[in-house]
Every structure is written in structure tokens, then in C-alpha cells.
Length: 242
Image (cartoon, rainbow, N blue to C red; front, top):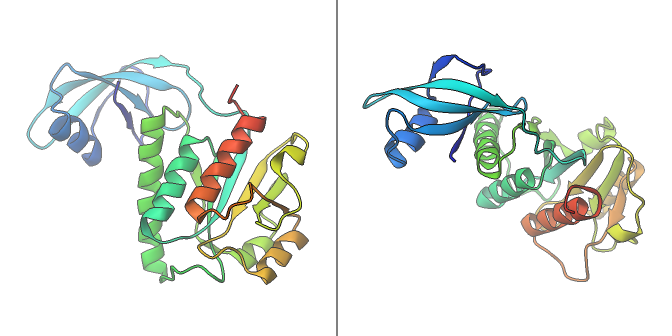
């Protein structure tokens, strides 16, 4: 059944107007009408049965019904620190990271990042990426929205020591593969470089900040492929891929 995210906290028995994007999807694209049902969630855990009770040409109202205490979050507390890549590559990385269960996403600007914007355009980018995250949650069945942090400079982020728990970074020259590592007892942060990878000084900086370089096979992967492959491997090894 179609799932729709609401920023407003939901509660059984309440009625509320559909957000504009939800109206377009349910009414204009899917041609849903009064009495049609869907799933609503607010990103705080669980989901709700919902039904359209009023539909007009420009708006619709839904009634929130029974709550389902469903939990689909991975037991692996995983954060993706992704150096920003161009256009659809970044969208793809974020979309798949959400599908693969990350709880936190940190967009980083590194020395080889090809995207350079002013503050206003970064704000628009963040709004766009949040939309990508919401859509991925709707599609994948997640009931909790991953946290998207502001865009940060890689060097500053490393200096401020913001990564938690196990710290891993993708490095084609890394000494270890994932199978060589012990199962973590807490959060895991995965650092992924941009197109062209992390520079030698950035790799050294990350190592000083506690990051361990890992390799994921003998082939060099594109940034949007490497991150997704590593996240999938982490879920298979330590997460909920039985």
C-alpha cells in the first residue's frame, strides 16, 4: 500500500490536509478518491492506517486511523559521511543509503569535491536531499527518518571529531577488508570520498582522527557504487541481513 510521510506528528482519530507533494502523488498521479486507503507515518516510529475523507481539485483531507507499532530499523547504528558528488550521483548515494538502513547522513566538502556552492544554494541542496530521503523512506518501508546534517568541510569535521564509535573509510590501498574486523559494539561511521577519491593528505588526516582504511575488493568503484556496496556489506556482516 502507498506510504506517505507527514512532518506533522500523527495521532489516531485526527484529520489533516495532505501536503502538496502527497496530494499530487495520491490524487493526481494515482487517481485515488474519497474512501481510498494508504499508510501514513511521521518518521518517529510506527505507522498509521489512513483514508481519504475529502477530495477536491486542489486539496484533500485524510483521517488517521489505527497505529501500527512496526519497527524496521537495522540493529546496526550506521552513519554515512559522504563527500559530495555531482547531481544524480549524490541523489543515488543518499537514496540507497536510506534503503540500506543508515541512521545519519553527513554531506562533506573535500579537496576533490567538484560541487562548490554559496550558502543559499547549499540550503536548497539540503532541502532537495531531504526530499530524496523522505521518498526513499516511503518506498522502503522505513518508519524513522534518518538525520541529515548540514554540509560541512571534511577537514573541519575531522578536527571536531564528530564521528562516533567504529570509524571506517574506503581506501583502495587499505590494509584490511571488512571480514578482518571484529563486530562493533556501538555506532559505525563510514567515510566515502568524492569522484577521484580522498587526497593523500585527507587520508592521513582521517587516520589521525581514528579512521581505519578498508578496501572492498581489487576493483576501483565509482563513489556512488563504493558507498552502496560497503553499506550492503556492513548490513550483511553486522546488521539485519540474515
